[in-house]
Image (cartoon, rainbow, N blue to C red; front, top):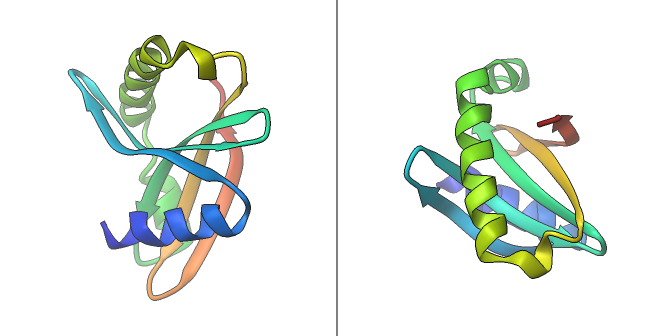
Length: 107
């Protein structure tokens, strides 16, 4: 949760508006939903001992779980579905290294 707090702070500093955090549905979850202009970013946050380990922690299973939650979130927020949809990743090495990967993967 500390990593998610850092990620939200970082995204806000980049001009994003946080729409949801820790959004969970049956079979999936989204760490952060953020919007900036015409972009709607669904963000996976991973904190590990190194940024490389954080990157490796993003698994295919996790991506599928996130996609499941994204579909539900978009059905409940159709006004946001017109935006450019992006899957981002935030790689965090505590105490304070954050790497934001835009379009980390495609659905």
